[in-house]
Image (tube, one colour):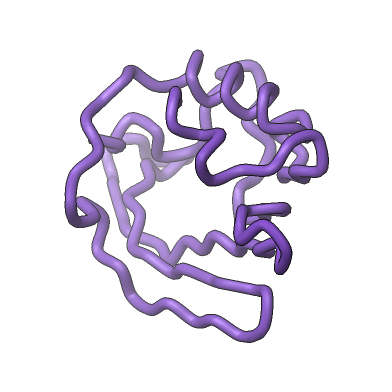
Length: 115
């Protein structure tokens, strides 16, 4: 999280409804929901595709989730993250993903499978 300022703009950074917009809010929310871990040179999630056009970049990857009606069943779904990159600074200005509301758990679905 301490490296977030290298990649995200502030205060213009816009996020999905689960995280208040702004880099500092992102750092607080995500920092509180996940344990610190080393940044690896490669992704531990299977990346399906990366698409970039003008200032938009989309990353699609396989994500494990637990079935709500049958919690003993785990399956993979295609997840995506979309970023708008600010053309002047080269930093992330906006982010969207396919996340549903986190609810009272304060964590996204499938967070138990994050490394």
